[in-house]
Image (cartoon, helix red, strand yellow):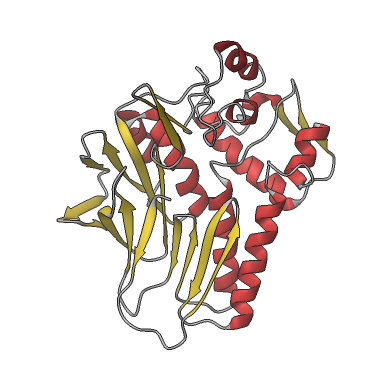
Amino acid sequence: MGSTLSLKGCFSKKLSRTFFAADTVCTITLYDGNEEALDGAVDLCNSLANKLNCKDENSEVGRLNKEKSAPTPSDDLLNIIVSALYYCDKSDGAFDITVKPLSDLWDFKNEKIPTDAEINNALEKVHYRNLVIRNNAITLKNDAELDFGAIAKGYIANKVSDFLVENGVKSAIINLGGNVTAIGENGGENFYIGIQKPFGEGNSALVSCSDMSVVTSGIYQRYFEKDGKIYHHLLNTKTGKPAQNNLYSVTIISPSATTADALSTLCFLLGIEKGMELLEEFEGTEGVFIDKNNQLHLTSGLNQNGNLIEMK
């Protein structure tokens, strides 16, 4: 969980629901909505999370991974793949949704480090060009398998946000395990979303925003330590091992939750200099990079006043 929420003001119509989906604890809170809109948002979140769950062999993506083809995929499966392939191609595979054979090797619960032979065998199956779309039919080659872990929560948040707005909601927070999307304002003011302090309590900073998503990827979110070395879940698709750079975390602030989710992982893998350079290509999208000295590095569209980060 990379982002937390700080709220001010009081809301007479506040409605909130906490539930488990997308392999994390989710909370959807409406400040001017109704039970019907909230029920619909929760149902949509659950439906999409189930459809895109690569760990479930009976989900739509699970069946694709097993059967290696989907002649008539759902619009959601096709759309998330097309969105993900954009970042795969743009990063020359640093971001890669065919990473599942590799990510499956890293057992963070049991603190298992795979052997070099296991990693090399998995790497032979990891390349986004093993994913082919022709006439909307999807085919996986060379035993490729898809894992949407770096983009699914963003895609789901965008769909849920669109649903809520279409149903008249003007103020809400969608929190999918720390991937936070703010709809509208907080009682006439911006929402304040915290960037978690790596390996510590509290926040490194607060982001002031409205109608934006704030998503963090960091090495402290899923990791274990052995012999003084930290092994984390942000994998270098060239080496098959946790990415090694001077970063603790990257937080992306964007009007699109899908963009924020994908870029938080990609910019971490690229590092501070290349990550900041990439973000210049995305209008309205900014980044906060926290290095291993706990120093914050902000992209040019952000101001920092004490503990508060605001858009310029």
